[in-house]
Length: 236
Image 1 (cartoon, helix red, strand yellow):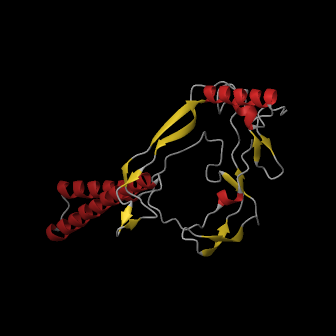
Image 2 (image 1 turned 90 degrees about the vertical axis):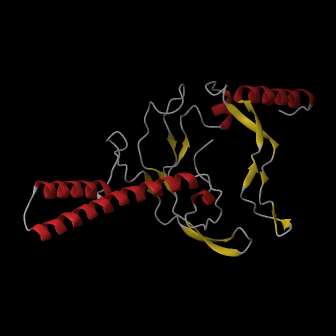
Image 3 (image 1 turned 180 degrees about the vertical axis):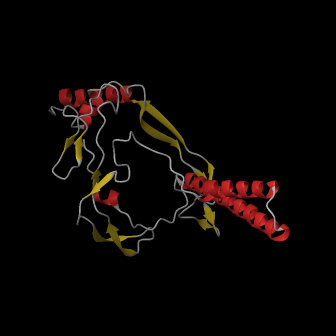
């Protein structure tokens, strides 16, 4: 068990063309919010322009003009000024959450989704740059990370170093889903294209169905199989 990621998980320059990415909806929502704030700022500019036009026409300052100036400045502030939501507990540098290993990035030969050869850049390897909170994590698991020479976390605690330790020596997740079996695959509205099977369908018609078992049941099945192999198969 460890958090040392496979090098392919650190790729930073892969071309992504599939719209089926789960985070796409969230990205659209963020974009819409940004446009909304920009729209507020534009309205503020319009109010200021109207205020200056009124002043140019009347050549005097009135209460209405002051109100227009105040509203316009307020809307511009809401729309265009930097919006920052503080994160963290104030003791950590949230702008540098990852510590990158200098010189660890490189180009490799790979293939794109259509099988064409490409040059793929693997970004620099990164390790956690923030301190661990002793109270974080799952109840019953003490967070005392074990780090390797590069700062990668090899274990969250000295007594949890393997998958067996994490699953079989803990009971906190026994009631949660562990393994799933697909009982019915997705069906797609665009499964056929121009009378031929579409190799990359994207529009889901009927979602697939999955059946899961809990960690407790998974451990029971694993122990059953293990006991059989040791008893009948003489496998230590």
